[in-house]
Length: 133
Image (cartoon, rainbow, N blue to C red; front, side):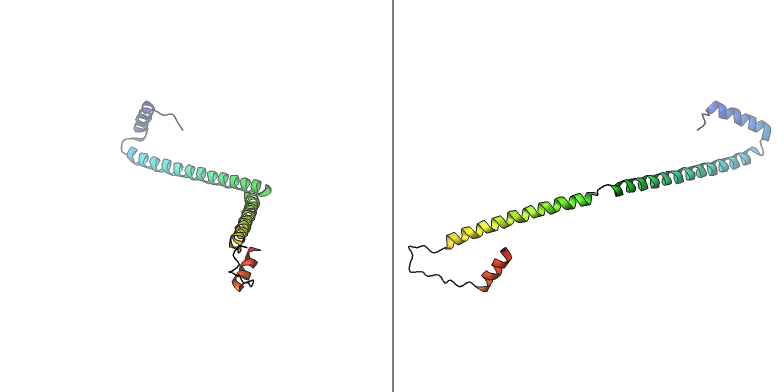
């Protein structure tokens, strides 16, 4: 703030000692220190208030700016929906392929005439078919 060195302070102390006197100098120095401390605290308080207001104003500006633009949640939500839809379609295809492979492998051989498989489906198979489709 002020550029006061050792020699400047010593000159100020000598002038103060001559003008005020040695009896009252310690009391006045103490009061001056208290007043300087209060002034510094007051200046720091004002600086802190100004910084808080600037930060609040900057935050309001950022919020207003992002309110007008497309939010990241909308973009993320759209991308997520596409990803989930693609994953579900892939899973459906894999289930259908596995089902058709299972049906091909579990189909009775034409050479094996002794074994007859019933053509009736169980309720569990019907529920499974509903879930798949």
